[in-house]
Amino acid sequence: MADILVIDDNQHVRRLVERILTAAGHTVTEAQGGSEGLAAFRRAPPAMVITDIVMEYGEGIETIRALRREAPAMPILAMSGSGTHYLYAAGRPGASATIEKPFRLHELTATVNRLLGETTANW
Image 1 (cartoon, rainbow, N blue to C red):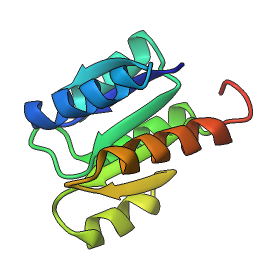
Image 2: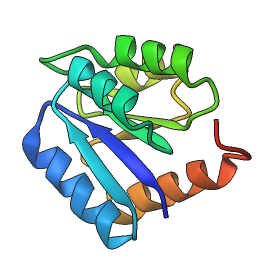
Image 3: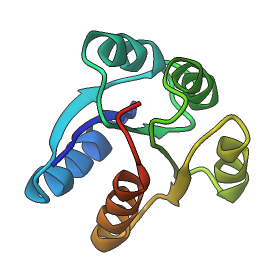
Image 4: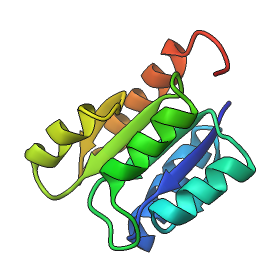
């Protein structure tokens, strides 16, 4: 399966996503915000990143832009519980897909599997 970086300032959300993805066979690294997430990405580039959009410790849109500059083909899943306008905005800087919180378990795993399956080569 895949190495996935999860960036969210809410520890409960990070742990929930980690449990779901680990149960699906993935390896998960967690980061509390954009700066920490970018540092984790640079230390050990994952196959995919899942990031919140509205965060206290680093804005998600800027994080997506930075990730997209460094890894143009890597799948990025943006998530938000702050409304669909944030999800729409996430697509503009390069999110591969978006998901609204709260999400259903199967919705998250299906989206992750779809995005990982669309990756034609290691970026």
